[in-house]
Length: 257
Image 1 (cartoon, rainbow, N blue to C red):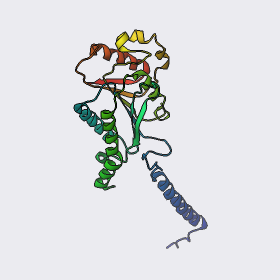
Image 2 (tube, rainbow, N blue to C red):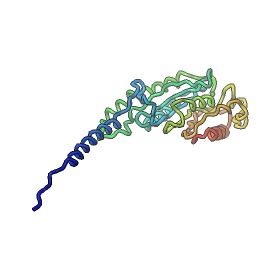
Image 3 (cartoon, helix red, strand yellow):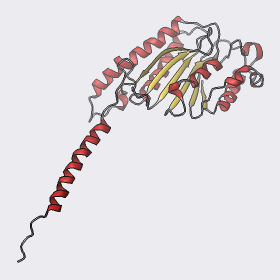
Image 4 (cartoon, rainbow, N blue to C red):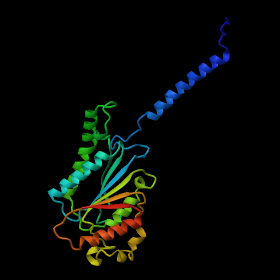
């Protein structure tokens, strides 16, 4: 019966190499799975690699009533719940005094939606409590306060859209960009006003604003039209203007009533 051979030096060297590789592999897994550093005030990633960014532009040229606040709150709730962890949600308003400098009400990132919590890897109740107190409730309070307390004398929508597209955190390199416009869609500024020229896209193309059209390639844009008792123009004409406008920006555009 042949004797078993003693394991030679190459065997032990191979074993040592395998163990070293395993240790480095464990360190690599730990490094890649470590949570990103975040800003404690906003919960946004310090490396600015937002997994998603939704901007809601709320036009307050006319007062909002309680029903308006309710459906905007529902809209906000849906958008907040669908954001991935560390996804950014920014709320802005057109600025009548400085049309190309819209007001930023808030810009915060989700701590992780309770709707997406994994019951095996996390405590869903703790996830829900953190999301509600650190992200959702402050967000809703900021928006509702602004809607009830502020009325702007004009609606420089095109100017605000240009400024939004120019934001450093809303460029083409960013993933999953969404833009939601909450407005009666009546563009009204010194550069171009529906009240003076109508919803005439050809006339708009003759103004200086055409040189500052927003670049929204790859952005999913939705208009949530605020109901008003009286409109100065047929809504069909207004919708046609914005369809042409967003087509020229490169956005993917849809309108909701």
